[in-house]
Length: 115
Image (tube, rainbow, N blue to C red; front, top):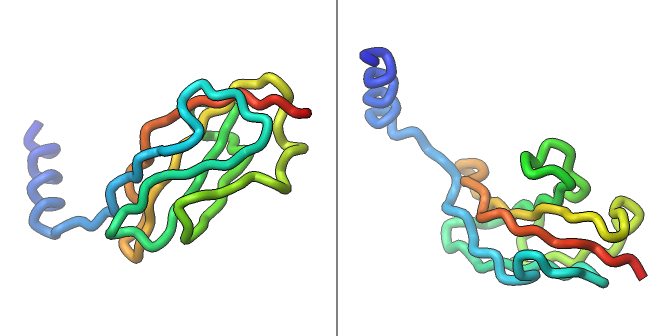
């Protein structure tokens, strides 16, 4: 217990930096079935880039999409072959700046309908 407290005190004293707070997800809503893939999220004042991650697993260990953009939207146009029809995917966004990547946003699910 003393070691953990010491580490926390040292981290607080050194002013450990972390990236900006996560954005709020806008579109698509949780559980939405997509026939095309636009994604959007809110702007975070401290951020200068965002990282969209889409994965077939909740832990985001094997991402289908892992793209960095300066915009608050991203439309998947060239990765359709990576998705399987009717499969549920998880998506989230991280905010980034010179201090690094912040915590991820909430996680939402989508199911993909390939037409």
